[in-house]
Length: 291
Image (cartoon, rainbow, N blue to C red):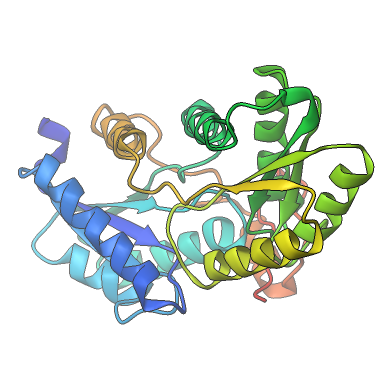
């Protein structure tokens, strides 16, 4: 691809307090390089890691004319809408001879829906395929103070409902926003579910994945009459590699070279005011709170 000549791809992970989570992202980057030996792929993290965003951008800018930042993040909240565009602007000032662009984040599109549907099928198999009408489904996301980011998970939950026979498909969040897992499980029990499939919507392991496992073990003890099945994070699914390939291909064909919050005039206002909600312009610039 001629558009990738002289280009560095910078994969940006969120970062985890659990070192194993960051190691998984590093392993992903190694596998992605193996799939594309002709691509220059660098890696950095937003937080909780040795190589953070500014250093990653500086490394990527060495001996190249173009840096393509790829947010390796499922939802567009404050990190994607505010921090990454701000870091790009600062990198442009530090490296005026290098072009910096940003692709869309991973997102909650049909690829993720397909992965989650596959997870649900595996969980139903683990439960010996009970009646879906008495089997609740809970999509469990990280949670954000950005309503549009939470809304992406709600949309996928609706897709799961529309594409299957489960009468009860809900969403819950691990932190920051509501409802939490325990509350949703209580609702499913009251509504007569006898099995519950819990699907974590996470790319890689981390502190929150450990928290989810502990919560599910506690719920099993609290509701011994309910059969629980817990899914796994899915960052190494082959479709995630394909999705990132599509982001790169879009850039190589001169498409999608600017995420909507990169250059948005409302972003600087949101940075200064540190508002939790969006700015009202194309659902832009919600700022995510840390837990």
